Image (tube, rainbow, N blue to C red):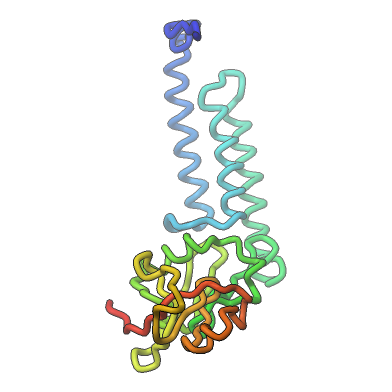
Length: 230
């Protein structure tokens, strides 16, 4: 169906004398990337904010082309690096002086769990999916929302959690798949949790009116109140 000349695709028209220069260019640009990232003050790898992603994309574009394009001097890439780092340092300094600038650049942290239930008021502003959120909490050995006093979605996408002490753990929405299953209201007992917001209601109340008083959804799951195990 497709007539592809593999030899022509891979090695035809190669300027073999330029291969050595590509090696040298790549080594120089790679070392420059490491140096610039070190000068930026970053000490390790973690999830990145949108601001940091923009910086990396800018550096990557500037570094990539000079590695293999003979007509682009490496000096041009160095100029781009210098400008990007100047902008980065300036905006970082401004962000350290002004909360408004900081939030424009990196966004605002958001409470996603308060007192053992999802924060309904931030629902429309939260683009962090339920599946991702459940996975993040499970990775911290959290079995249900009743163990959480507060959970904050940070600007870099990580989640910070404050826990209830064991004697204050509430009934809460289960986070593991085997327990997060919609129940038949006619065949269950005990406290129930709304599958959408985590609101806890007694079985008799839900049986009388299955609409959640917080979010107006009508799917329920058996709530848990197990203590944390670390």
